[in-house]
Length: 489
Image 1: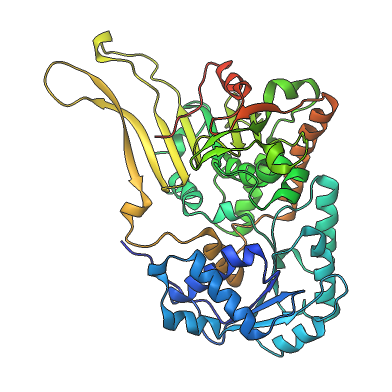
Image 2: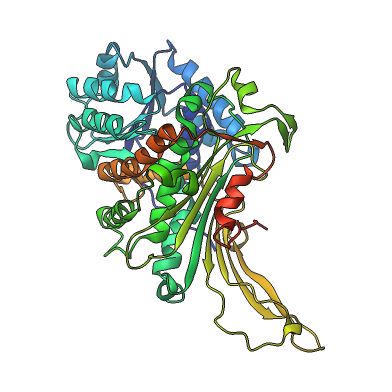
C-alpha cells in the first residue's frame, strides 16, 4: 500500500536561525524530502536568515552538507538535490536591532506565494522578530509564523510571549509547533479511536483500568546544556509533548477534524486535569537525575559531571495524573519521561481491566488483562495484546500474544519525519496538529502548581543509574496502586 502525495501551492519559506542546529538537522532535510516526494510546485523558495554573514552559495553549501549528513544516502538524488539548492537564498538579519529586514523584504519582493516564517531561534527573540516583520509590512496578507517550544517557562512568561506575537499576528496565523504531533502514530491514535467501532465503546472507565505514557531517551545533555539546566524534564517534555499525548488519548470525539473542533476537545481535558498541589506532590510526582552508569555506547558520566557544576535540575519525571470528568473518573494516567534511561522508546499503553470471571481451570494458566500499545518511536506501530489458546493437543493452555501492526511492514512507503508533515500543514494553513494559545496556557496552569510544590516542599531529585528505568521511587509510584510499568517488547 502506498500513500498519495498532494502537491501544495507555491510558497516562500523563511527560516530565522537558518544556519542553526534545528535548520541543519530537521528543517532543511525535511524540505528536501518533500521536494523529493513531488510535493513542491514552482516558484517555491526557501530563504535562510540569521546573523551570520553568508553568501547564497555559502548557504547552499551549508544546506547540501546538512542534507548529506541527515538524509539516508539511498534517498539522495543528485539532480533533485541540485534543484532544491537552487531554491535557496540567504539574508543576513539581526533579530534584535532589525538590521537586514529591509533586505529580507526586498528579497521576498511582491511575490504572491504563500509566506511562512519559521522562528528556529531562542524564544527571547520571538517578540522582536514578530515586531520587525510587522514594521516592514511582512505580516500583511495571509502569512504564517511558526514558533518552536518552549512557549515560556511558566504561565506568566507564556502569556507574555503570546501577547508579543499576538499583537502583530492573528491567532489563525500563529503555528505553535510540537513535533510529537506530527508523528504518524500520534495521528493514528485518532484513527484508531474514531474510525473503528471496536475501540470507542470501550474507551472509558468501565473497561480501562489505567493508561501509561512513556517517553524515554538514552541520550544525555548532548548540545542542550545551557537550555536544559534552566528547564528540566517537567518543562521540556511534560508541559508540551506528554500533555498533548494525554489529550489525544483522553479527549472526547470532536464534531469533525476541523482544527478548532479538535483543539476544543483537547482544551477540555487540560482544564479537567486535577491539580497537584502542596502535600500531594511527594506522593504523586517523582523527580530524578541520572548518575554515572552505562548506556548503549558504554560507560557514561552523570548529569552534574556532564554539566560541569552541581545542579538540582530533574532529568526524569514520573507522575500520576487524574482527569476529573465522567469518562475517566477513577482511571489514573501514569506519565514518565527521562534521559539516560534503559531504552529509547515512546509509547502509550492502554491497560484494560481483567476479565470479571475465569471459566478456565488453573492448569490453563493466568489471564493477563488486554493491552493496546501504541508505539511512537522507534518502530512505529500498534500492538493489541490478547489471550488465545496455545496451539496443539493436550488440553486448554492460554497464551498472551500480540496482534502486531508495524507501519514499516504494512505500508510500502518511507515513514516521513514529523517535521515534513507539519511544515506542509503550515503551508496548507491547517492548524489541527498545532497548539492554540489557550491550550498552551491551560497546560502551564496545571504545571505551575507542581513546580511551586516542588519548591515549597524542597522535593529534591533522586539519583538513578544511567541505563536504568529511573529512580526506585517511580516504581513505587505505580506499584503502591497494585500496578506495574509496561515493559516494551
